[in-house]
Each structure stands twice: as structure tokens, then as C-alpha cells.
Image 1 (tube, helix red, strand yellow):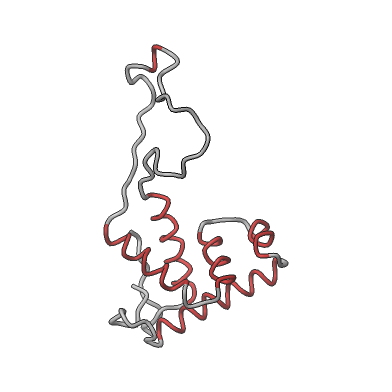
Image 2: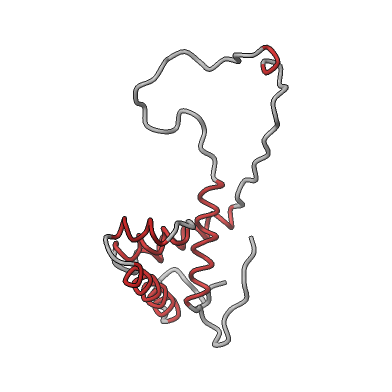
Length: 146
């Protein structure tokens, strides 16, 4: 995982929090999601089979998947705890932005204009950084964003 150095004051800045949230969203996307792990709905009970004989013996493209490391998963879980430091509406905006969603989608979900959504995002990042630097997280030993 690409971790940035700490800010000048030795703590965690709002941009560091935004980068950590983006890496947490990437880690969440890289986690395995095996078939059948989702909710059961309408569908068929027969297994999938190859429609074309050329695809029956592995002639389709190979897919490579990069699994996240345990350190990446721990950092992701820490970011989930950080989201609890702000209101649920602001946490939703922060997480949607970390996933790379466009401001238009975020504004529709949040029910506000772009400027208000951006201000809430910046304020939530600053609040998280302030609370992390202030030592308000019990499990964190050093006030850094790593």
C-alpha cells in the first residue's frame, strides 16, 4: 500500500485523511466476493455452463486478482472507525467521494447542492483529522495518519 508521509506538524492533515479513505475504498473493492455470497433472490438453481465448446476448456481470458494484505485491511477498518467520528450524513459524503463518485451523484444522494456537499466533505475531513490528532481515539498509540 502506498502510504504518504506525515504532515509537517507530525499529525494527520485533512488531505492525509482523504488519501487514507481512498485507499480504504480500494481495499474494500479488492476484497473477495465469492459467487453466492450475496442475497438470494430470484434466479435459477442450475449451475452455469459453457455455451460455446471453445470456452468449456479454459480458452477464455485469465483474470488476475490482487488480494489486499492484512495491513491494508486493518487500515481500512481504522478508516471505518474514523467515519463514526462525524455525522452519518457527512460520513456518507466522505465515503462516496473516497469511492470516486462524481459530485453530481453525491449531491443527489445527499439532497444538497454541490457547494454544500463540498463544504460538508471538507469539514468532515478536518473534523476527523482534528480528532485523530487530538488523541480522542483510544486504540491509537501515536497521533499520526501513518
